[in-house]
Image 1: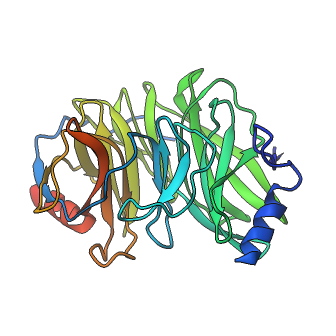
Image 2: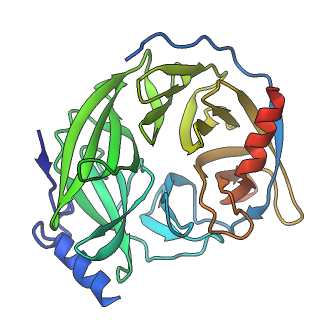
Image 3: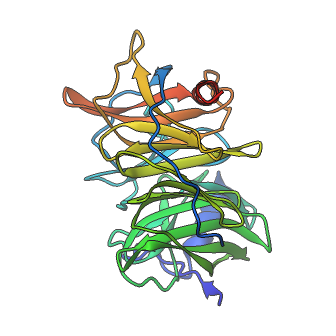
Length: 342
């Protein structure tokens, strides 16, 4: 059943009927349950750090990048609001008065002539799905509620662009009441309204801790390790020694590439052939290796000169100072992974 979006930020900051209109005005002014057997990978690859941001204010509670356009990151700070930053860590927007512990990747959409970026996520209290919206003319991201019937507390969200039946993005989430089931739906625009429609539920053997949507496939991490489900729901399982706390994936040809940060503070990469390896970062002249890692995103955006084929961005945490984002070359990572499996 289709559900009409609530065009009001949950704390009453924007009038329900006026939220999208305000944005438009401002922008105008400017299956198979048998998983393949897997054992933990012993492969290891080295990734030179090519770029590093300045120091961030504090550790991140959420981290996402849009699938298209310039490489601008929406970050949530543990004790602060949501803000867009660039490749140097410099602010692109003012901080928005919202907090979230979960973000899906952003999708570019044109609504009533306005070019917007939509980042799905969880509300401050994690009791509802929301969209964090940003575009030219907006000083900060704006939160708009999606009128989805959420039972329990949202533990994580993920998203991908959609181009079928008028949908503009796919959104999935799981809750504390059913932590082993991913609930998937879609969002489409009807004029100035955003409509949420549930699609299906995808069950896993154990609890979920992370997810990403890649075309029609699902990448998930949890107590079962790392799992890639193709469009037919056929799973490829990758066993890990620690739990993936953040997973991010992209499609490269007909192969799904995945990066995940683990509960032990390490990073692994994997792909839909079942190959996987641990990543060790190598410091450069002006960068240092992380003691531990937090959030990460894998992207094929080629808008930065240093990364014409995409990058892996990682929240680097060190006891000596505030966190930073470090960047490594995506193609180099997965070329090394392919060489390890030859």
